[in-house]
Length: 479
Image (cartoon, rainbow, N blue to C red; front, side, top):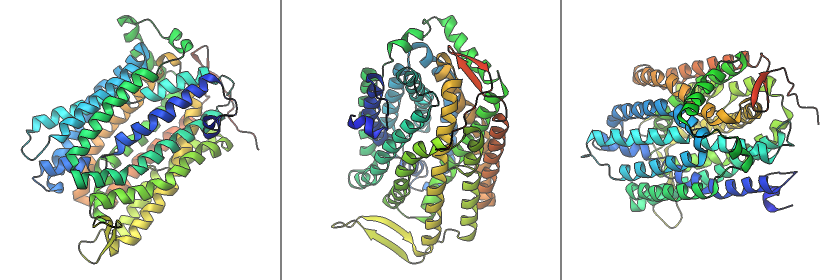
């Protein structure tokens, strides 16, 4: 058995699944490193430019730019997903990274004198890139996995494979956080953005070269006519509402996802910077948070084999990172231990330098530890929920509309998120973070209730790429 087979836990390795494993292990590290390199300070960089050096003063305009990005992504997400089903995912993925490359270069030019229309164009371009990337890579992998592993009937092997993929991505994404912030501290943030621009172009070239379909998948793709493209657009929407299982599970997941948008765009980094002090300190804390995620990602694929999806998906969605329990615990933490201004500062210095890799007020130690424990525990449940859900959808969604369906979900989630961002953006300065977090938790709870209702209906079974509603059992026998 090869090293790749051992790493991905492949009990029945063949040339096709090994090819998929090689592509994933080659492409994922550079993708993870590129995406994560500047995430700690990207929003802060733009906000400071808009606020004349003040991050807080620029947040309102950043919120407006984020809405523009989300609107553009919403308008194009589903059409570009169907485009991937029409012409092949690799072209759409490559185009997405070219858009990201140009956007990163543009943000490297931003300063306090930059015209606002330039930033509007930048965020619109990021919206175009996000619309093309969402769902495309997953659709390509799932379509080809079904050809490579026809013997994986209950999709347990699929869950293990995705757990390993998540672990690999998490390792690189975690390892790059502190180096990215240190490079920014030494060479400047703009230099990091330019490096990301170059890496995006490299990724686009790799995708065009490697991310190709097996002949069986290519042969099943519809001929590129505009009539069939518009038919694909209609088919995806029709399929979503073709049965109550698909409708409630998908829309419920989108409701939870929309709450995650609010968390990521409005709450996450203000929460970090409320308890910590510098870019590098935030990166160090995120690195510490992500390290347990490396192990939970891998284990979630293995341990999820023991759980019945219909029974456990709602439970794990309730407890997951970005779920009801997650938001409520953070709300209680911020209520009991509000961020304190001033006081004694604790510094951890990088050996042989004067760079503080961790800096926080002494009063932040306890809430930071509570936040760390919450992230770690809920991250494990999120991995379970995602893998169990994909085990079902892999065989429910027809290949010919898979990319479109995977893109339709973020489109719906974004539509749900836009009014929430406006509402909760107003609520944060009005009522504070604890009330806002609890409110976001209620939204996530609504999504869980919808998923639970959807799973009470029969699961559609697909035969010859056409879905039929039949009751099937996904219960996992005791081992």
